[in-house]
Length: 318
Image (cartoon, rainbow, N blue to C red; front, side):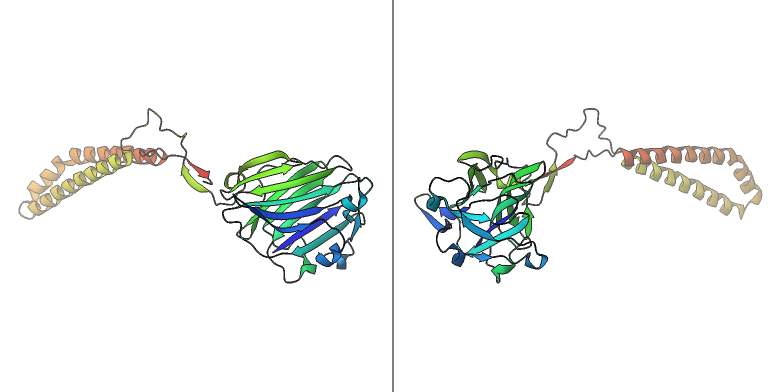
């Protein structure tokens, strides 16, 4: 695994990084760095932006304000308006059944117009010098600001997708020259706690506050069937009446065929019967047209207002 420190900023910073896991009875520190003597040999500088001429380099410094220069020395961005990146490896581990804790310290010695300072933890890289924005990671954590938009990022990678928190965490880097300690704790029950300067700024559910799970559709619990809803199956009723009308047509057709058959033996009687039945045929035709129109209207109504009530669906991530 690797721990990355990336800064793209106009400010100067000090960083001390720690990654650990804590069980109920005991904890283990998997990676720790205070950037003391020999830190350059433990870290690999990124060359991601070298070809563009925008890569910056870190220097060891305690900054403008310190109590003990040796104790307070960290890494500092050496130039303005550059991209800065470092990475260091450590052994892979599992945090199953344990709290995962990531903590680091950062200090801005002048205001940042547009930039950020993040720690990333992720899988091993084949070539650490290529580390940059496209490099996959598991967790990204730290302050970000550009103009009036400012927040503390906490991003989790899930199934190859980097998932941002639905609402922003507060930004705490406004005070120039003040060191801030960032800590994130990921618990086995998929809850997350974020502290800045030992003050809790967030505690909640990873599943609820990050869209790591695909939404499921369920019936809206607040959606109720209207009290005056008609449960009668209008479209079924219309189908039944159409079937009845078709049967009436078939009866009329058989009567006509019977009359035609009778004409073979008595043409005069058949013509007389046919003529006598003319008003009835006309009336039946008129009634059928009226029935068909009524049934078509019912079918249209039934399509627009189906008798079966359909509940509205909503999305949930639980």
